[in-house]
Image 1 (cartoon, rainbow, N blue to C red):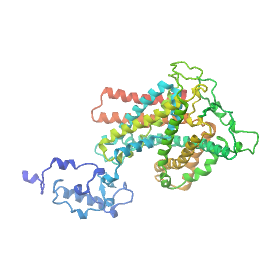
Image 2: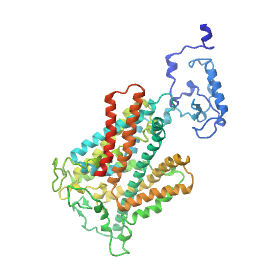
Image 3: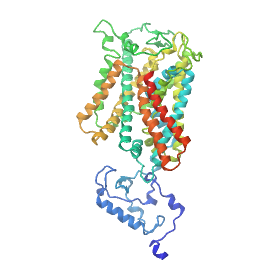
Length: 559
């Protein structure tokens, strides 16, 4: 009877044979012999499309023959020369789909150092310009502590997101992103809510870009005009007259207060003259520059493909490195200006602990935000077992960069004669347009943002149109209408409320509530509960994360 139960061609199952079982990302074509579906048997070119009935029959046939021999027996394995090329190999899933195998060639993977700096480069964005302002709002000592604490929390939540697909049993999650995980646990609600909050982060970033591009284009044009016409910049701004000139564009007569909406509306007062034909009349930071950008950027947003602009992503690294060098040079020339007053402001200094600290937490939520693409970035890591280490090192580098820029700008800001409260949401605004080093920084950042802005618009279009219409480019008029809405929001904010600090903190706290705190914590607790491993300390801690996310968002409305 025992002989009747044995396979026709028996082989011993060794530990080595079980070690060959794994995901398709680590497929070895010589040892695993994946199921091959001929290209003509694929219903559509999309790897996730349903396979034909012929392919399903072929799959059943392969499963039948696989029962004749153990996986470690090479007797019935096809020879090497009949295995199709890598780009022709498809793996059949029990879910009824056929997808291409992503090769295991180690040369296509990145070493840890490349992965770490890819995360660093992706996370470094416009938020770095607002870190000194955020530290000023929270107070110097409290700001540093909040930056470290928020970075650790964001790292842990990012770790939860990274491991979340691996905790789903019996499902192939090799090509999943976090919205797919949310859909698995929360259904359509999780899918659409994650999409909405992802749109908030992307569109918020595009609005910030529009405000900054208006700012940089204005100051760049002002520098060129003054240089070409030998215009000496007058000392009309409230600032210092040393070798390293620092200005306070909108001096706050109440050092302990906050920048108000009415103050921002006066930001363009220095550009206006009674002469309607003057350069200042047609080159206004809030009245004309945001409209000029439409002529350049709206056509770029309508491109069907954004591959051309992806070639310029290296400019982001150059811009950040240059900013770090600029901050270092300015700090060396200006020196440190610090006094410690714990709770009460003085004439020139802010207290070390301020109640406006939620403004910094909102900015940092977006500054450390990479949760919606971390899974994709880590897939290219050559040594997958080092993912957690590499992610931690990347967050450490990002935190050190933010600390370096924030602490140096705050410490070097010359007080007296200026108030520390003069530090702007974009710290480059504290330097005059005639500063050559700052002019170079603004020019770099302007060109970088002009190339990145269409990429962000492309991501918005792909996610939104793909979910609503099932097509990334349903028609030119659909794309044009979407782009007009995005551009319009940027123009309105650049004209009426060009405070990038507030825009960043609101968009960061909003998308962070869902994609950083709420969904990762819920996914982790549900996964542990299904495994029977959820304990009350873990439940309390992850519930506390959700409460922090809600409090972070609500606090932005009271600052």
